[in-house]
Image (tube, rainbow, N blue to C red; front, side, top):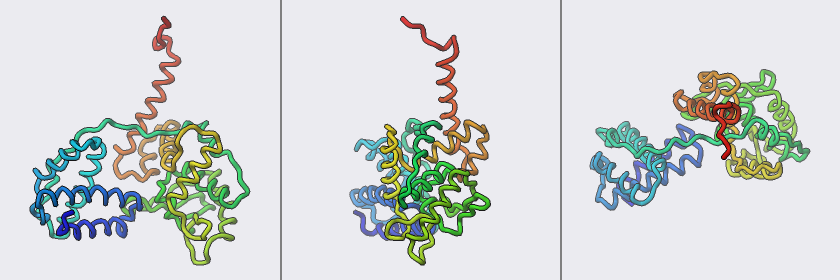
Length: 301
């Protein structure tokens, strides 16, 4: 590793955690990508940030490709380096951005996986009188009702919930706040959980969702519990928290056709991020066309 460069990376990662409030998983991903850059710099004798130039970063990307890294992973790695360089410019350790003319290889556009409405209803139809089951039901209903990210849901405090108005205040990426509606089923599940929470949470704990220790839940527990309920409901798909967000966006867009509204609800700063769900909707329409239109059906041999 290039030790002279490590303090700059450490300050950058600390800023991600404290200022941008990125999830631990995302921060760790940044750390791994930047460790690869530090390793490259050490191998090539780069001991100051001003010595890092565009040609170095093109060579770095090419090295990643030779080592078998997928185009999407190289894109992510260069994105981490680009964010670091912008941080170092603000800190005065870099005069110009060496990533400005560096492009990652193009990756195939991967559409997010979703559950159809019937499968989602099947997943959410369980009822449990166990405290943790009541909590899990509220978590899953809120994910699907309001399209929250995992980190957003885990960061919710009691003051963020307004069950009378059926809204929740969410602090998203870049500490950008938004108010999103809470559906009737989710509001009922939350009200039931809040009654159970009072017997479980530590006195000073402000989190909406807590574990058996009375403290704020961590991401791994939520991931494991959701996967467990999916197995119990007999779902063959791998069900994870972000699948609820994808399904929320796809179903809402399919019903309303209002891309801007879906963008606001998801908290996307750029509408191009939301547009991926229009492709999902088109796929749905294409399947109906292929199955229904007399000129689309293939002739049997």
